[in-house]
Image (cartoon, rainbow, N blue to C red; front, top):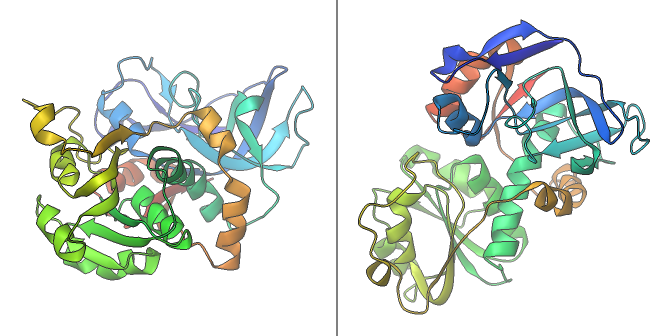
Length: 322
């Protein structure tokens, strides 16, 4: 099989497409013939050397969609459409940047609804993260006013679509004025241009502040996002698009307003399996849930795919097609 392998951290060019033996699954595992693999910023961070627990060489890719090739334990039938994500995929064991991957059966979800592989590959981790952030951490309610900081990220666009379907009013931020239509087509009612400070603009829209804030940029904008939340509201930090991991001289009493809750979301394989993925894929097929795929690449162009993701040039999810 063909696979993109990295032997040491570095720039996009460290990803090498090579031939590897097809894995042999044991009982309790599933061999998946990968049809599409969504790309994620956690893979970018691993490639850059920010994942010290990942041993090399490694085939990256924390998610994929494809067809069951073999399931020795009988959990799935050959040819069944499936998706999988996380649980050590692409980190502890080889992941989705390959024509085949072998994963624990307990991390695999069968899909009844067939969409274009481009979409099937884009949604597993993206919808899990967006849904989990909104429903588990932010406890989103119909009628909530939701601010999505980092709205043009793939998770941000998916979150806007899910929240809009849930009956919420949504505002999304972007640093580029040309992204207005992208945000509005995904479900945002309002677009805020992010110059590093948006709390004042949020309160022009909603004088009391946002009921819920989904923070996807990360630590560089978290304090300002907290200032955008109304008393009794919640701010959830999920993303790290900024690439900065901590806040220097963070003063909790000054940063977190009275009666505002700060939480995080870090989904795992159980969260993925518990996500109503089939229901949302049916909504995508019906046209009631819009998913933005930014760019697709063949595996042979993995270097350019990573460069596109790193430079935020996609305008949606980046997907590898096998």
